[in-house]
Amino acid sequence: MKKILFLLLSFAFVTVNAQTVDEIITKYSDAIGGLEAFNKVKTIKMSGTIIMQAGEIPFTTEIINGKAVRLDAEFMGQAIVNSYSNGIGWKINPFGGATTATDVTGTELNDLKSQTSIANNLMDYKNRGHKVELAGNEMVDGVNTFKIKLTAKEDDRITYYFINSTDYLLSKSVTSRDMQGQEVDVETFYKDLKDIDGLKFSMKRSQEVGGQEFQSFVMSKIELNVPVDEKIFQK
Image 1 (cartoon, rainbow, N blue to C red):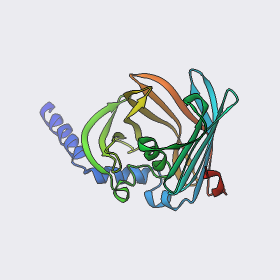
Image 2 (tube, rainbow, N blue to C red; image 1 turned 90 degrees about the vertical axis):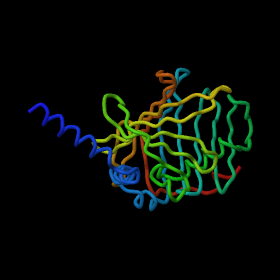
Image 3 (cartoon, rainbow, N blue to C red; image 1 turned 90 degrees about the horizontal axis):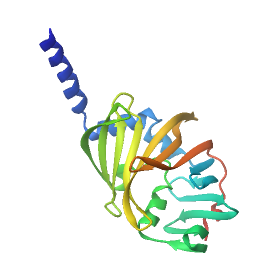
C-alpha cells in the first residue's frame, strides 16, 4: 500500500512539472483576468502609501496603457516625480540630487517604460520580445511555486517570477537592483488580491533585501478607464 501511494504521489508531482512555461504563464494570466482584458484597459489611476522606515509617503500613479506613466509622491514637503512617455523619461527627486526635472536613461528608463503597461512583463513577454524559461520549483511561504526566469529584451536583466502551483497566482518576484551603488537582489511579495472590474490586483507589495523588508506599497484605491491628461507626462 505504501509503495502504491508513493507511486501515485510521484506521478502527481511529475504531472504538475510536465506543464510548459507557456501553459503556466497562460494559467497565471487567466487567474487574474486575462492578458486580453488587461490590454483593453485604456488608463489606470492608483493611489496609496509607500511605507518605509523613514515614514509613510502618499503617492498617486497614473498610466495611459502602453504609452505613459507618472508617479507623484510627497515626503517632508518635497515633491517626488517619476514620468515616462514616448521614449522620454524624467524625474524630480530632491533626496536623490534631482531638484529639477532631470532626464532618466539606461536601466532606470527601461524600468519606467515597463511600468506603462498594466499587464506585467511575464504576462506579455512574447509581444515585448523577452525570453522565458522554467527554472524549476521553489517553496514560497510554505507553498510550492513554479520558478520562471525572464530575461528582458532591452538590457538582459533577469527577473524570477514565482507562480503558485495551486491557484496560479503570483507569489513573489526577484530582480537585481542598484541600491546606493551596490547590486542587490530585491524580493517583491504580492498580497491582498482585489477584484477591480473583473481584473485582479495586489493591493500590497512588500519588498525585501536579505530577508529584511525595507519598503511596501499599499494601494488604497485603483480606478480603471478614468480621464488622464496627457500633458502631465511632459517634462
